[in-house]
Image 1 (tube, rainbow, N blue to C red):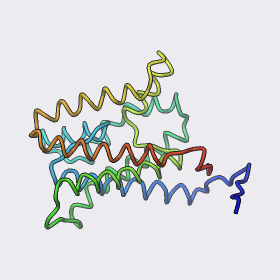
Image 2 (cartoon, rainbow, N blue to C red; image 1 turned 30 degrees about the vertical axis):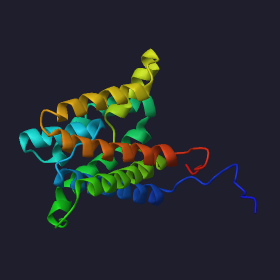
Image 3 (tube, rainbow, N blue to C red; image 1 turned 90 degrees about the vertical axis):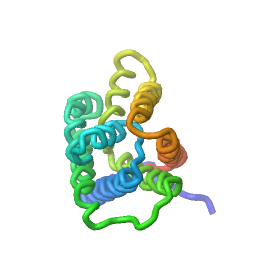
Length: 205
């Protein structure tokens, strides 16, 4: 049977967007709970917030929320007010849920390899949901797109260089084995996004 795709797909409603942001923010927070329970790290802005949290003892949620504040101006210029508003909501949900969930979720046993993979699946699905509802988790991704516009330097390279710096810094706070498991988690996140974030297949707006 041939699949028929409408040339004018229905736009997301406000309720669609709300559930997408709630799902994305909450699942991302659950991924962070797994990550920090195991003492692992990750890339991007979340990874920097995790490292600051480890080094200072401050909660991940407030650190992540504050780190993202300077990026909204760039997001406004590059993506527009609708994107910034949704991203702000998604970041706020993640920040709040990352503080709340540890009071209700615990792990009696969790192997770092299994935890890294589950973190990758949770975070990847969270980001997919946010992307599909016109949002992100802010941070370095916005800077990467802005630099690409201004200089032509590929956004992917900017994000890769940032991740290399984050993981290099992680080696000063965590042992090599922990960083290796962390790399596995980051790899799974990126594979989930690369294999599923297809605008030619997902056409809802």
